[in-house]
Each structure stands twice: as structure tokens, then as C-alpha cells.
Length: 236
Length: 236
DNA sequence: CACCGTTGCGTTCATATTGGTCGTGGAAGG
DNA sequence: CCTTCCACGACCAATATGAACGCAACGGTG
Image 1 (cartoon, rainbow over the protein chains, first blue to last red):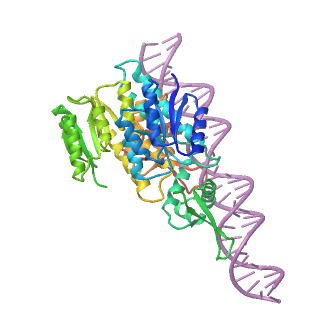
Image 2: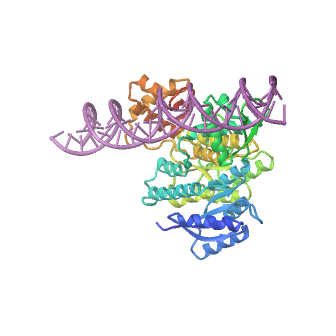
Image 3: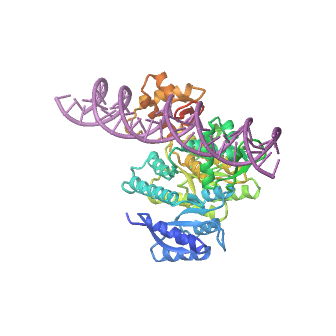
């Protein structure tokens, strides 16, 4: 199977270059071009399509100087351009995500992301296409509901990006979920008490989240005893 | 949460009535209307939207007398209508499926289907919306990548993935039957003990059911030793 | 003002207990 | 009789727990 031709739409030159470099390291993809804003993105797409060399996938930033990413996607669909779209954005809003899904966004990447996350999303997209081609391309009658289901399933995000040794995703999720709900800063002891885990465990996960920048860490003074670290949810 | 308003687009009256009846049996959904062809579907959608009572989900047959389902979808997007779409079709062609995905089809039902399949697809769609609302709607701080991933995962989870090597239907049935009867969450060890199977086998089937979304998996803390996974029946 | 006991959390280490994988045995089907 | 497939047993790896030790700030006391 030939490479999947990708168009990167991103206004910040640094980020655009980074995405292009990421793409280059992934097998099965080739960079078709880069566009700094919505208008040139649409023009490039039309040109490629007219030349019989259509773009198959667009890495689409949502925040662009001239148009919103959703508008670009809608115009693409309206003009009959059918590349798949992976949305890249720092915005996490319910309406945005839902609209993105309804307009045919296949994956949703939240900035900032690591190369591992990026590679994971694109690889799963490629697997989705290959499975679809394998089950539907050969025979016209061989596909069944489960075939289509299986192809869709590979779009499902496993998202098990490498965690440091000794940490488990389920526990991390539990801590994150709890932290998100807390308006005030909480101490490791409070997390331990609320989640029913040991103090050591709670502190270890809070420390990891603090290193990752998801929570902020400050010292709490005023009471006797060694000062207590308090953690506060910051991401967002 | 209020019901999800659904429009059924289907030219055969028998099938349309059947879909409506199916919908009535599903909690969380309400039938907004029925359209026998593309033109009236678009008109109905516009009318509902103008009345401030938009349709949120369309069950869209691909083969209609006047327009192809993909054309209807494209026109919907072009006119700014953003309901989600579940495609219903007997046609299994690579290009159709791929185009459907790119235009924002969230589920793909292949005729003929049973009520169980129908209910499964719609239920997973509702779970997707609820998860998205839960993680993005409540707090202003937004959601993390894993939150969005999880919502997408429940959208694309297949109803029945093929049995991996090493699993048998009879054992699976036994585990499912046991899980259904348990009100509380149970650990793999308890399943092993109750069904008289080995821990490895119990765990493997439970893991499969967790992947399929039939049971949920959470960690159990409080005791020394590695945290124990406990499983709870969710679908039924 | 300086020193020291008190107090609680941070940190480390051994331990307990489960998850995951590999190879093998027995049963069912051809 | 041979092949295939599934369950079992046992190994290694993983991860939360509890206790013990150390450290930093508080609050008296000289």
C-alpha cells in the first residue's frame, strides 16, 4: 500500500515544522504540504485534487488566524473534498468536540502532546484504513457487520502511553478524577483518605502529576510538624 | 439528561416503522420524526432547527429514491446542520464506508440487523455522549487527552469482537451468566472460586469482557499486595 | 535571641499479593 | 491416529501497603 498523503494545517511555523518532522519518522505517511491558514489549506487541497493527487489526511489545527478549524472542515465537506481529519487543538470544549465528531474528525489530539501520543493516533488511523481495505477491498460481498466493527475498533484509542515503572493507569485515572473535582488545594493525606489508598501511593501519583504539570505543588505552613505539600489541579 | 431526539430516514415504510418501534424500546431516545426520502429529510431537519428544537441524531438509510445518503449528509453539513449520523445500509463497499467516516458517520449498521445489534450501537452512542458531557461539561477546566480517548473508545467499541484464540463460547457464557447475577463487583479470584476454574482462565475471560465493554474494571485498594482488579456487570 | 523538644509529613525498604506469560496435558473433532 | 484447541499450573513481573527513619517548621524555654 502506498503512503498516506498528509496535509499539515498549522499557523505557528515551529509547530508546523514539528508535525512535519514527526510525520517523517512514521512509516506509511508522506507529507504532501503545509498550510499556515484556512484559505491556503482549502486552496492546496483543491489543487492537489485537481491534479489527481488528492490529500487523504489533514492534520488540522483548530485555532487559525482566518477561519476556525470547524469552518474549514465544513467548507471541505461542502466542496466535496473528502480527506479524513485529525483535529489538533488546545481547546477542550464539549461543543467543539461534539461538532468535530459530527463533521468527520477521526482522531482528536490535545496540545501539548508527546511524539508517542502523536504516533499512536496516526498509527491507529493507518490500521483502521488497512483493516477496512482488507475486509472490503477484496471481495464485494465478504464484509459483514463485525468486519466494519473491527475496523472502527482500531480507531479506538488505547492511549497507553509509557508510564513510569510502578504506576498504573487505573490508579492514575482515579487520582486525576478526584483532583479535577477539587476546587481547593488538597494534601496527599486528604487524597489518601478520600480514595482509600495509602499515603505513599497517593503521594507518588501526585508527585508524578506535579512533574507532568497537570497539578501544581505548593507548601502549606502554619501548623506544627513538617510542612505539607498541597496540590491543585491546573490543567485547563 | 433529556432524551436524544432522533430522525429516521428510510424509504421503505415497513423498515421505517420497525426502526421507530426499536427506538421506542430504548431508554434515552425519542423519535422526532420520519422521512421517506432525502428532500423531506433535509426539510424536516431545517424545520426542527428553525423551531429551536433540533434533531440530534439521524438514522440514515443510504439507498433512497431521490438522493444517496452520502449526498444528504454532505448537504446537511453544508447547510450547517450538525446532527450525528448513524448510517444504515445493505451496501458494503470500501469507498462508501470511507466516505461515510470522513463525513461524520459515527456508527455503521449493515442490513439486515437484529434488535440486539441496533440497541447496542445506539446505546454505545449514548454512552459516548454521556462520557463527553461528564468530562467536559461539568468542570470548566476541560478534559485531558485520556478523557477524550475514553469517550471515543466507547463510541467505537465493537458489539462483538471475534473470540480471540483460547476462548470458548461455553466458558464465556458461564462467566457472563455468573457476572450478571452478581450485584456487587467481584474479583477474578472470586470468579475462579465460584465457577471452579483456574485463576488464569477466569481472568482471561473477564479481561475479554472488559475490553468488549460488557463489564467494567476498577482497582480495589486497602489491602497489602498488588491491587486487585474487580469487575462489575454494566451492560444488560 | 538561641536552642531544643515536639510534631507531623517526606522518603525508603521489605513484603504481600495479584497480574501476565509460557509451556504442557487432556479432550474433542476429523 | 493425528491435529487442534482450550484449560491448567507455575513461573516471573508488577504494584500498593506498612513500618521505620529522617527532616523541616513550630512553640516553648533558657
